[in-house]
Amino acid sequence: MAGSFKYNWPQKLREAQAALKEVETWQAVADEIGVPRTSLKDAVHRAGIKSIDDLRECDLSGMQGPVSKEGVQFTVEGNWATVHSNSKRIKTLEQLIDACKIDLNVWRVQRWLVNKWEVGAKTEHKDLTWTGGVLDGSLRAEGLTVEPLFQIKAWLIKRQPEPVFPVIQPIVAAVTYMSPSLPKQGLLRSLVFADPHFWFRRDDQSASLYPLHDRRALDIVLQIAEAAKPDRIDMLGDSLDMADWTTKFLRTPEFTGSTQPSLLECHWWLAQFRATCPDAVISLHEGNHGKRLRSALLTHLPAAYGLKAADEMELPPALSLPKLLGLSGLGIEWIGEYPDDENWLNSAIMLQHGDTARVAGNTAKAVVERADYTTIMGHIHRIELVSRTKHSKDHRQPIAAFCPGCLCHIDGRVPAVRGRQQWQQGCVIVDYDPNGHLHSISPIVIDEGEAVWNSMKFQHRDRLADLRNDMPDWNWN
Image 1 (cartoon, rainbow, N blue to C red):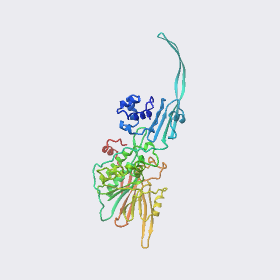
Image 2: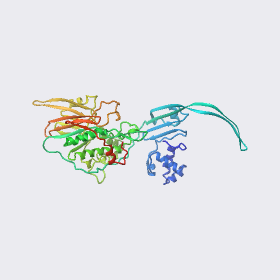
Image 3: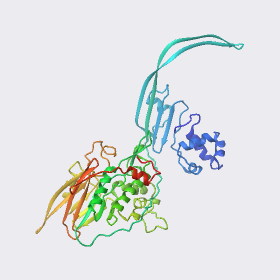
Image 4: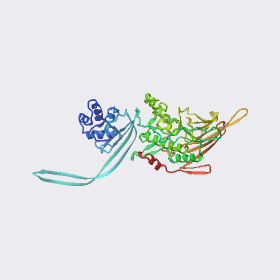
């Protein structure tokens, strides 16, 4: 934890927590542990503790303290820590770890760096005495000496991660919509897209949030919705990345702390689609990233799984994406229970997020080989279309597996196995007979905020100003 090195603040905060069993005010706590009240409040603020009640309840067992050496800082944030030194005496990672008394049974060094530079300093020898109010002696300069300085920084991660849950609030739709129903007769049209991965990457220096979702691609699909006037809009999952909620692996700190702004912006875009197509049936699939919230609750907080507010028993559970996103107020249907999130356009076309992933070009092939119906899916972030013919005695039925691509950024900012992914952005228009199996799939490729469909060219609009105007309390970038 960064801060003054006069006190071992993690130890002092643990003492303060113990003192709260006997006293009730900041001043009384400060007196009890022998520190100034202002210094205690500063340390509490740096630790992210907002009140005496928070200090009383929070877990300080894993907090490591700064050493009593000038220029060394040790900052703990959940399951991650950084340690930084500008000390002349510390020149290696081993010395840094030893100086901070870091327990390598608890922490693992994820990465580290050393910078070295040289500075010049004047060398002086002083032979001075003070006798009877008179200064006597000599001062001798011996030129310029060059001295090396070292800067060492290491990023650490806990070997046994502890569950850390972000603070989130459910969203209430500003305008409430009723859930529409589909026409009974005639051909229908569905606009299908997948994988926007609403989330943010935090910049360490500026604390700014940079989106993983691509607002340009989202606006293109919104414009296509306005032009195509679909009877239904089907979003095939991974609306949110949910990096804070994964139970399988740790995200580095720049991907954490984004649950609330991601929920807010995702809801904002969903409201844009609802306002553009007020009479369309809209469905939102869960996806493997959406499932992370359910998995985290079942793993770490099973008592909260499925809980509902007493006056909202007809609504989804309090800690669920349909509730947190305010889908009920937007009249949007939630298709959950991934990977069994099946939704059918007609007897021959099934929609799902998908749980199959192969190298480029092979996922659709693997799906179509084992299916007896056309499957439109997400998950792989690529535009793929593979078809085959299903033969019966008196009929030959074409079957396809199709992925429309994704709506997240494809420049490497979204965490993946490797930086250069074979990803593409896009959506698809599906015209179909709801009472048969006849259908037409029209893929739409989105390229750097531009797309073409039905002899029309679409160019993205900058929606950042609208987002900031509608939600001014957040620092959108």
